[in-house]
Length: 423
Ligand SMILES: O=C(O)C1=C[C@@H](OP(=O)(O)O)[C@@H](O)[C@H](O)C1
Ligand SMILES: C=C(OP(=O)(O)O)C(=O)O
Figure 1: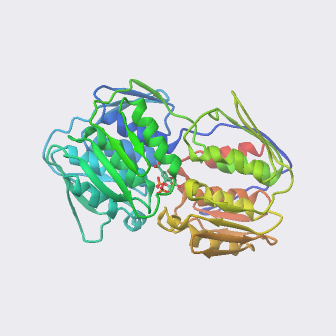
Figure 2: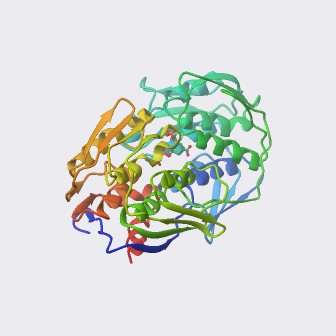
């Protein structure tokens, strides 16, 4: 580590590693929200401990919840939204906290102000705030439809029918569905506009709702969640397959074998799609009860990929495709311009900065591999850019990954785990 950069290590040879990744961010933060809305405490087992997960627990505390660490698990108690004095919720740059918690504030009786990093003030949220207003929430913002905004709780949200454009982020829809059982009339959401991205994350929301005893229904673009008393005394979080992405693509980039412990045999996580992607790119992949094994083939085929459903995997996949035997095109991810940073601009700039020919398209990236060289890889406070830089460093000496600690959004132990994978 030099200054505020980390020299991403070059793979010394073919890999032979077993990797454990921490709990899924998306599952952890959904489980925490549903636990807080439940009628009894929930023991959330093996949750993620990272900046985004802590921000979610902090939000629940501000909203009248409480939780305690129990070894590697967290016991979350139901929200007791007492009091009328103003409070605030820190969002950091966590999309899940920014989108999932405002509805919870509407269930209480105090004004709650939401704000966070500069970056979260630029991320889309207006369609969600407007939908919550339509459902009965009292929300005041500065006219930009962005943080900072204040939800004035009046002891509950009526709920009912609402139209929602969730094309900028699937999290708007997930937010309404997660809170739906706690609205007096439940919620019926009719999607308008272009289809939401990240379909697996919508399936994940429905799956967790069912695990907590709700009865969501879906008919095409219409979703209904009736009011319900939630309960799930014991919930175990799966390993984060999007966090596993740089490790599994490492086998393809560097050769050798990487095994990911505990890869679930069935899951709603978008990262599970990596299995078919790696096969398509010419790698060997096998899944058994112990986990996932990926063996690199030595070459990677250039390809065309629509990543609309799995957008959060884009940075790591784009890095891998810089090592392909021909050009690739990634499409379907215009919404990444509203992620932690404008990921399309960041990837085009940084991958090109190391020698690849990468340009932004209307909804993705066109990648033409070329010989790469070392240099500073800027990460724009984006955890997945750190992971992408690490992948590049496997084959390119001197990749200096800026601000590696920003990876703590989802995996504070990433750098150590990466070094261990390389032996
Ligand atoms: O619901 C979730 O947990 C997430 C949904 C997706 O958001 P978008 O639909 O905004 O891409 C994903 O990219 C994000 O990392 C996590
Ligand atoms: C888009 C992401 O995060 P967030 O939950 O902040 O939306 C991500 O993790 O890639």
